[in-house]
Length: 501
Image (cartoon, rainbow, N blue to C red; front, side):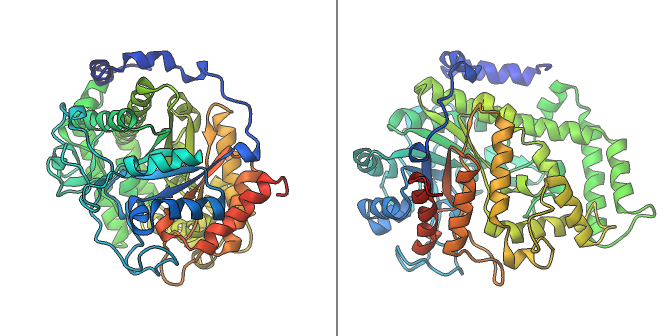
C-alpha cells in the first residue's frame, strides 16, 4: 500500500505521544488467542449509562444485572454526547419498570473525570458531563465491580455537540462548506483528542478494556441515502483536502463530482426522472468521476486510522487491555457500507468486534434504508424488488414470510438473522479476534413497529450463543430495558451455561 504524507504525519504524531512502545503488539496476532471459551467463560456484557447507577444505586443495579442475565461485564458509557447511549429513556417512549420514572435533559460529555494533563495538545478540553455534577462514574463503579469479579469497559461514542467549546474546531464539512456535528479524522485536533481521551481513561482507571463506537460513513454512502437517517455527505474540510492531495486525488474534480451527485439525488427525490433513468444517470456520474470513490476510500482510511490509534494507545498503557469496536447496524442493510467493513482487516487492531445485530429494530430500520434508496439510485424499481435484490445480496432470502416491505416494520427480523450474521462475522475474522454480537432489548421503535418481548430476547440471545459467539453485549442500554425482557436474554444465557441450550 502506498503511504501518503498524512500517514507519515499520523505515525510521527503517535510517536511523539509516546506510543512507540506499542509497536511490539503489531501485528497483534503474535499474541495467540485463547482456545474457544466455554459457555460459562463467555463475556456477557451490557451497555449501561451513568445515570442508571445514580438513579437506582450501584449495588442494586449490579444485583439486577447478575440475577436477571448473569452479566459479568459492563460497557459503561464513559464518554458520550448521545442520549441513546448516555441518558435515560428516549422522550415519548414508555418508561421501563425500574429507575426514575421521568425523562432527563441530557447533555453528555465525559462521565468520568477529565485529567487535564492528558489534554495539553488539544483545545478540546471542556468535556466533563454536567448531568451528574462532580460524579465520576468510573471511580464510583469500579470498586463495586471488582469485589464481584465483574469487568468494566469504557464505552466511548463518537458524537459531539455543536455548542461544546472548541468542538467546532474539529467538525467535518459537507461539499458546500457547511459545518457538521461529526468530526474529521484527518483534523489534528481530533486526532490528539481521541488519543488523549483513551490514554486518560486507560491510565487513570483500572478498567479492563475500551469499546469505541462511530456510527458514521463516507460521503458517497450518505449522499445516495445508504443509511437509516438523513445526513449530508462529508468530509471536505481543509484537512481532508490536504490528505486527498497528498494521496494524488484531484480535489477540484472530486468536489465537482460530489456536487453533481448531490444534484442528482435532489432531482431523484423530487421525482425528476432523467431521460435514461435514475440508475443509468447515477452510474454515468460514477464513471465520469472516479474521484468520488477515491474520496470515499480516503474517508474510510481516516476512520480506520482512528481505530488503529485507539488500539495502539490502549496497548501502550497496558498490553492486557481489550480494545474493540461497535459496528454500526447499517452493515446489516447496505451492501455498499458492508463492503467497506472488512472484519478481517479490523483484526489487525481489535481484540473484539461488536456487530450490531438488533433483530427487532432491524425490521423497521431495513425498510427505512430501502425506502431511502428507492428515492435515489434505485428509483426505477418497485420497493419489493429492491428488497428482493438486497435479500439476495445479504443472504436473507429464506428468513421467513415476514421479509416483505409491508411486514418487516411490525415483525422485525427473526432470530435466524442473529445466528446467520454472527456466523458470518466469525467466518470473516478467521479466529483472529472475538465476536460479541449486540442483542436488541427494547431498542426504541416508532408506533406500530416491532416491540420487544421476552421470547424475542431469549431467541436472539440463544441464536448468538449457538452460532459460536465468544460473548455478547445486551444493548442499547439498561435504562431503556424492561426487566422481563432482560430476563428473557438471561434465560438463554443460563441455559447455555448449564449446557441445556
